[in-house]
Image (cartoon, rainbow over all chains, first blue to last red; front, side, top):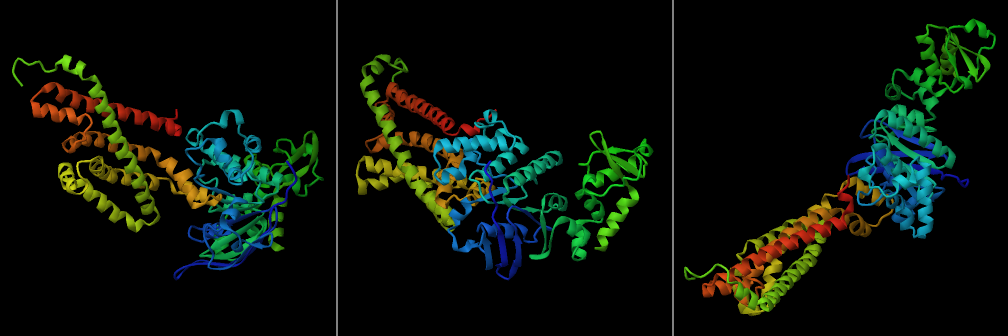
Length: 325
Length: 217
C-alpha cells in the first residue's frame, strides 16, 4: 500500500441550531492528519450532529469546517462526500447489491474503470480480513454482523479517502467481535494513516481508539485531550463521572509493562511463583495477574530474556506520580 | 339452454379456434395497455407524493374515488364522450389500476430503511440516483405485489368491456349469455381465469429474476 497522509480537519466555532434549540454550540477543535479523534458523550450531546456536519449531511448554522484548509461549505456536497469515508452503526449496506458492488459504490460514482474497481474490491476484502472468493458475490443478508461491519469499513475506504467519519460503527456487534474489529481497525488506520472522526457513547471504546478524545455535553466541548490526559486530569466533575470511578485502572490499561520502567534490582530467582508476563501485557492485566497470584511483583520476560520486575508499589507510585504532574 | 344440450360442445370450440385466439390476443393487449399506462401514471403520481408528502392524501383520495365507481357505470358514462372505442375501455381500465399501484409504489419506497438512504447520501449519491438505484430496486417486491393485483383485477374487468365492443374473452361470455349457449360462456370464463393464473405466475417469475437478493438461503 502506497504511503498516504490523512487530512487535517479543523472545526471553528461550529454551531447548529434547530429553532430555539442549540444542538451544537461553538464547537472548535483540530484533528491532526492521520489521527483518530473520538467524539464521546451521553445521547443527545451533539456528537452525531457534529460528525454529520463534516460531510454536510447536516448544514451548520454558523462556523467553519476546514479539511486541509479548505472550507467544506464552499464545496459541492456530493463531491465532498465522495472523498470522505462514511460508516454508520447499522452499516447501511445496500441489501440489493452484492458485497463487491457495495464496496464498489464510491469508485463507480467517481467513474473508475471496471478492472481498477475489481482489483480494488479484491484488495479491500483482503485488507479487512475477508476472503474475496467466498465473499464477493454474497448479499448483505448472507453475512454475519461482524462481516457486515467489515464490508462497511471496506466500502468507506474504497476510494482511498484521506478522512473517514464513523458513527458508532462497532455498536451493533457482540463484545468479542467488537474488540476484534477495534483491534483490526486500529491496525488498518495506523498502516494507512487515514484521519478518522469517530463517534461513540462508550468511553472505553473512546479511550482505546482515540488519539484525541472530545468529550461533549449538551452541544458543548467539555474536554479535548489524549486519553491518558483525560483519565489523569478530567476537566470537571462531569468528565470525571463520565470516564468512570475506575479511571485509574483504565489508565493502567493504556500502558504496557514493556513501556514502563522495571525494577532490575529484583533477582529473577526471587520471583518464583510470581506471574511471568510479556512486554506487550497491559499494566492493568499485570495488576490483575498479580492480585490473582497473591504476588507483590511479576517477572517481565521477552522470550528467554528477563527484563526486570513490575511491583505493586511501583504501580501505585506511577498513578500518584502521574496525578501530580 | 335445452336440457339435452351438453355443457361444452367441443365441435364449436374446434370450429372457433381462430376467433378464440384473436380474442385471447385482444384480452392480452387490453390488459397490457391498461397496466402499462397505469404504471406510467402511477409512477409519476408516486414520485410526486414521495417528494411532496402533502400531495399523497389528495392523490389517494382521487385514485380511491376512481376505484369505487362501478365499472359498468363508468363505461356507460364515458361512451357519450369517447364513444364505443378502445379509448373508452382503457380510460376505465387504467383508472382502476391507479389506487393499488400508487399505494404500493409509495409504500415500497418508504419502506427502504433510513440507514440505507443515509449511507447512500453520505457516500455521495445524488437524491435522483438514490431514487433510481437504491429506492426503486428495494421497493420492487412491494411494487410487484401491486402489479400482480392490478393485473388480475384488470383481466377480470376486461371482460366487462365486451359491453362496449371490446372485451377480449369477455366477448364469448356476452355471446353465451345472449344466446343462452353454455359453450362460449365457459370458453370466456375459463379462458379469463386461466389467463389470470398464467399472467400472475409470469409476474412472480419476473419478480424473482429481478430481485435475486430476496431469496437467499
